[in-house]
Amino acid sequence: RPRPHVQEEDLKPRPADLTVPYISEWWFADMTEESKKSVPVTVFTGYLGSGKTTIIMGLIRSLPQDYKCVWLKNEFGDMEIDSEMAKESNIAVKEIVNGCLCCTLVGQLGSAIQELVETQAPDRIIIETSGSAYPAPLAWELRRYEPVISLDGIVTVIDAVNFPGYVDKSYTAKQQAMYTDLILINKHEEVGDENKLDKVLDDVHELNPETPKVRTVGKKGTVKADLVFGLDTKLFSHVGEVDLARATHKHSSDHQELEVDLLQAVLDEDFEVEKSELEVALKSLPEDAVYRAKGLVPILDQGVKRKMLFNYVAGRVTFDEVFNYAGLPKLIFMGDEFRRYKKKIIAALKLPEDKVTVNFRGETPSHEHSADHSHAHSHA
Image (cartoon, rainbow, N blue to C red; front, side, top):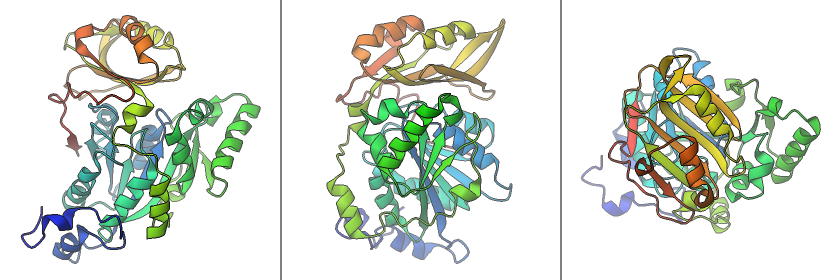
């Protein structure tokens, strides 16, 4: 909330000099002495379906009850889905949708952080980027809010199963592996072939030979908090480093659409699907075209109807029951060549075509579902 003595120009970014905070000067001055501690921020990046959300939820659940960690989540597309599981566990989460925090929604970052600090008084903030986010611009933006917050570390999650497929065609995946303080090798137990895993590790090492690599444990991607927190990053702390990153940053405001096609649907409340049929339908989709899918839908499982969150990544499907979600059924698909596969996806899941919107690479994103899901959502 701007103060009378703050001019509009003072609230705009100053790309030439990142050592001078542009919002936190007046904000920090108005804070009480007790609340003037700098809140550490840990950023999680990683490509679509790498397992960021699962890792973060497990990490937060493992923390002591008196340690307050809040979660700022940037969801791909224009609907919130993953955060419904956080609500089930009473995890404090604020969600920003309909764009990417590192570019089109960068202006919302400051107000979101301010709201979390003022209303939640957290011991730490975890920011989960969308799968298409570049770490560099987000990191240098976060530097602007010091000393209210302090950028503690950037953590990149690598999907060991699918990394060979997307690193070859995704500039984002390469950037995420290069600009980070810690690399988590996730799903490595699912690779099966030790030679294939060695090749993945070699490829990651080639992109970033200096950064530590840690393997997560189990299907939930378990990692100890003391490995992730307290990294005290030095990334993007100097203007020269920021200028270099900016010069090599092939970024545009529509880069989410440039990297993937997007199919979304908000369905009528009477929509339901058999669990076995949904699993077969999802597994029938081409893995090289559908990278990621997720949804909240009523599912019939052995004659019992339950609201469930389904997650699909490269041929693997998981289901989690949700108990408190009261909204309409919704789902989202991310991938490539949806002009070719759109009808196959719609037919496989028996979706009504009038409920489906598709954005292809390079197109302006459609916001037809925005009336049902606002740009920012907050849950405690």
